[in-house]
Image (cartoon, rainbow, N blue to C red; front, side, top):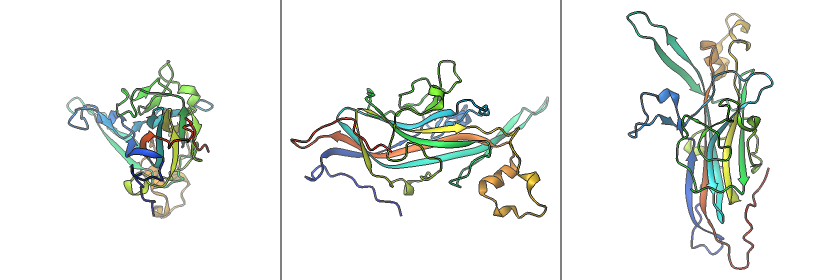
Length: 287
């Protein structure tokens, strides 16, 4: 059972923090599947998904680096991390070339990864909860959207794929910034699946100034060269015993990682120490 979210009372004399509020900072990024359709009354093409570059990650080359969700913690501010959410979408695009009288059409087919330890044989995703000490931002948290879903700002707060000036190479050779937090600096499974009921499972605090961020590092699969499952199955195999993801690959062998989502749930507020306490800034539990 998930731990309950504890809201700090501003009148509790045993608490050294005041003015707490619960913040659910989720990924929000331009979604190419929403182009020409929109996703809200604002007529934007945004969703909670950060789109992954579909080209395979070359052998020996840096992995894609995605900033999923980030929160700027101001000086003398504090952020108590209460939970995370993760989601991964795998899929492919079915296309019809059309004809002289019928325009080409396409349809996206995909599923969310639900097996926590599953990965493509030649690709995978790692996750990174980090804190970048000393970085200050004008806003306490960012609700803007990176367009076109990629960013040159390595220490920003917008959801995006982080790149260098050449427009394609991953920033910092795909390595996430900041110091690891709470033993979650690098983990390789979906241990906090997307859903409101599972998020309040953590309880540790970071002190500003700095940026708290959840990142994903993606090694994109290559469907043209990876081993296919179908030819290896013995005749008459009951495919229902396979994982949901492997069943999907049997039906759609060209599937790849299409998008990743992440969220940070935290109690956010101003750090106001009692008289005589040491208001040291930037202390945090590192993993």
